[in-house]
Structures are given as C-alpha cells and as structure tokens.
Image 1 (spheres, rainbow, N blue to C red):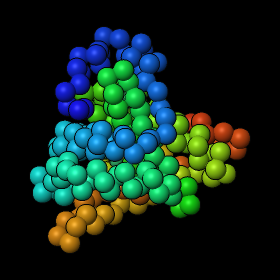
Image 2: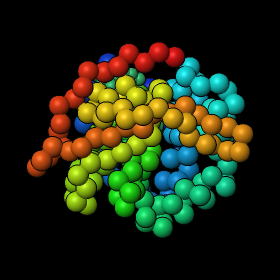
Image 3: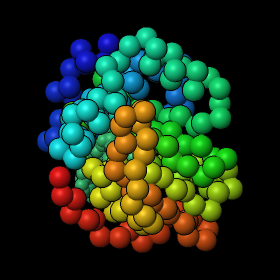
Length: 197
Ligand SMILES: CC(C)(COP(=O)(O)OP(=O)(O)OC[C@H]1O[C@@H](n2cnc3c(N)ncnc32)[C@H](O)[C@@H]1OP(=O)(O)O)[C@@H](O)C(=O)NCCC(=O)NCCS
C-alpha cells in the first residue's frame, strides 16, 4: 500500500541518484490504486494553498474502490496513454495523454517525491510519445498551482477559464499549449512564473 511506503528513501540529499533510478513506464491495471493515491496526495498537499477546501475535495475525493475501478478501466480501454513513474519504493507519479485530441490530461507527483525532476521526466516521456504519434504539440488545462511548472517547460498560457468539477464546483484554470520545434520537442523554456497562492 502506497502510504506505507518508506518515504525516507526519497532523500533530498541525493536527488540525482534518486531520479536516475526512477523509471517511467506504461501503466497497467495493477497500478490503478497507487495512481489514485498519488492523485489524492498531490491535490490535497500541493494545490490546497491555491483553491478552497470544497474545490480540493471535489477535485480529488478520498480514494475508494469506485475510483480505482474507474482508473483500471481507463488504463484498459486504451484511448488514453497512461504512464507511471516508479521508484524503488513504488509509484511516485503518473501522467495521462489523449493523442486524438492532443490533450495532456493529467500529471501528478506524490508530494513526498516533489521537486526532484519526476514531473519533468513524466512530461518528457509523454512529449516523446506525442511526437511518435505524429503530434506537433500538446494542449492542457493547468491548475493554478501547476502553471509555473508547465511554463518552465515551454508551455504558453492561452486563456484563463474554469473547469466544471461537479454540478456545484468549478475550479479556476489556465489553458496552455506547447508547439514542438521542428524535429524535436525541446523548445526554449520560458522563465518560470512566480505563482501566487
Ligand atoms: C506540477 C507537478 C506535477 C510538478 O512535479 P515535480 O516532480 O515536483 O516537478 P519537477 O521536480 O520535475 O520540476 C521541474 C522544474 O519545474 C519547475 N517547477 C516545478 N514545480 C514548480 C512550482 N510549484 N513552482 C515553480 N516552478 C516549478 C522548476 O523549475 C523545477 O525545477 P527545480 O526544482 O530544479 O527548480 C507536481 O507539483 C504536482 O503533482 N502538483 C499537483 C498536481 C497538479 O496540479 N498537477 C497538474 C494538473 S494540471
């Protein structure tokens, strides 16, 4: 179970050694529970300074069998490309892309493993896959807390808007896009925004 993982393995003293042992691979249905737990922890810990509690709760409610099953089906169906970042201690992040619509739908890293390059590694894996699928770019709806991350990886803000989470809850978001350079995905990163909570 993910929350029993010895997180002290994710040592901030050795980020290079840690990240080199993190593998990004295709998700399997057996990863569904770990993915949902990463989602819950990332939203509740990393986004709570940017959104009120009711939005955080609607965005990621407590993990349960219904959520695991929903994720298992998503992985099995195959319309989305789902990848996980796996460390020795287990799944520490995941990403989800829909090639048909050029949408990068999700990218989450467990807060205990944050700021060690895992988000970047997942993003690079999805962008590489997008190029392999013949896409010239990706678009996404970024949460306010994630805008700086995407911006420093070459995504440009197109517009501000809101995302309907449930009948009563909408969250403020930013539509962003990255057009890949001809022959590659490494466009010049823009300077990071200073995100204000
Ligand atoms: C956004 C998220 C995926 C980033 O994952 P991460 O593994 O911590 O990011 P990385 O360590 O790969 O960051 C790489 C670089 O991106 C930039 N960056 C990442 N997070 C940032 C932040 N919160 N503010 C500013 N810059 C940031 C930095 O330049 C960082 O390099 P540095 O740590 O050497 O300064 C993670 O914070 C997360 O899961 N957030 C909550 C969930 C979420 O909102 N997901 C997006 C839904 S649209």
